[in-house]
Length: 110
Image 1 (cartoon, rainbow, N blue to C red):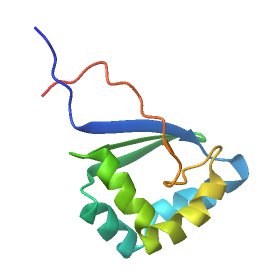
Image 2 (image 1 turned 45 degrees about the vertical axis):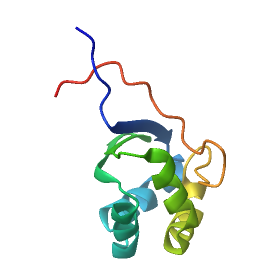
Image 3 (image 1 turned 30 degrees about the vertical axis):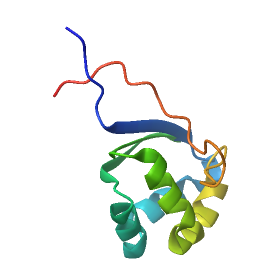
């Protein structure tokens, strides 16, 4: 039996130790307009999990490329990313060719 892929997209990031508290606080109290922009981009069922300074991100989306373009063009998301991108190890400038390195899905149970 061949598995069909899901419409889930996942990746991980490490948050800088000295930025953990601020990063978590921002995500416990996200800006409503950032949430709206993600919804408008077609992102749904978005979750972030934490273990120490390692964060796991997962969302569903029919067209991640279009969603990332929408986020890259969003003024409010650019402001949010300007703050939070300095908190992670690496970058998530959505204008880069591949701002997020997606994880390979190896199992999906409908």
